[in-house]
Amino acid sequence: MSDDQRRQELGHFLRTRRLRLSPEEAGLPHTEFTRRRTKGLRREEVSALAGISLPWYTSLEQGRDINVSDQVLDSLARVLRLDQDEHHHLHFLANPRQNAFIPREEEPAVSSSLNYLLDQMPLCPAYITDAKMNVLAWNRLALSVFGTFGTADSRERNMIWRIFMLSSYRTMFIDWEDLAASLLGHFRVMYSQNLEDTWYPEFIAEMTESSPEFATMWENYEVRCTSKHPQAITHPLAGLLNLSTLVLPVQNGSGQFLHAYTPDLQDGSVERLAQLAEETTVKQ
Image 1 (cartoon, rainbow, N blue to C red):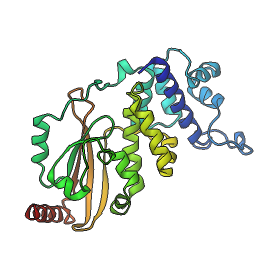
Image 2: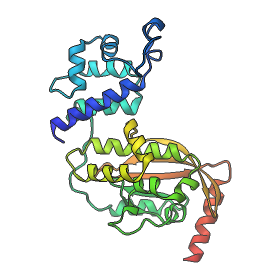
Image 3: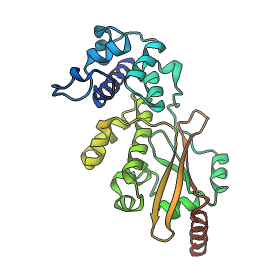
Image 4: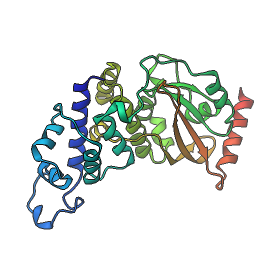
């Protein structure tokens, strides 16, 4: 990533966080915004609340070459009400060499140990993605739950493409919008760490043209790192599956992530997944 690209992305991120926060949420006196027509906070309000000068903050938003300390970044995170993932993202964009892991440029194959791990999760649909959200490897149950992932060079291998372009996913995932925002938030982080890779702007342009929902969510600039959150699925064969989505980085410098969907232990999801796995095995 070039320094110019990083600074521009930092400025864009700060602008989106500033504009999404209302004066009331920021704790400003009511008289300060009763007649306001524009949404979000003004630059001078952010700078005043963070205890920094307006010209300095303006330069930061405009992507100019200025140094910023961790203390100032923490202050901005507090004022802009950033969550943990966004706070981490802010530090990465400002000081990437100090604050974040950057994947290697090459994309190694999935290791034999990871493939073995996938096979040892018979009741957890799981797959491995690269930094572009392409699915590299999966276990048998993932195929049963999510369907075929297509050939290695097809768009069907990409989870961002799948969640926005497959109509079956919109009906299968009960809270489709939350899952789409979560996957896209993860994708945004990876994009920000690989701004020099021309594949990303080409793919983003393609998706923006193909999917209005993608275009809207991308403009919202969601940021989500590794996470665990509930995800309910209505499967055509297994019925309702209550799962927890767990996303973990593979610590080998590859930019790969393990996505595992663990079933609820109390509501019968384990038994329904076991039945689905058994039926799939018999058919094969």
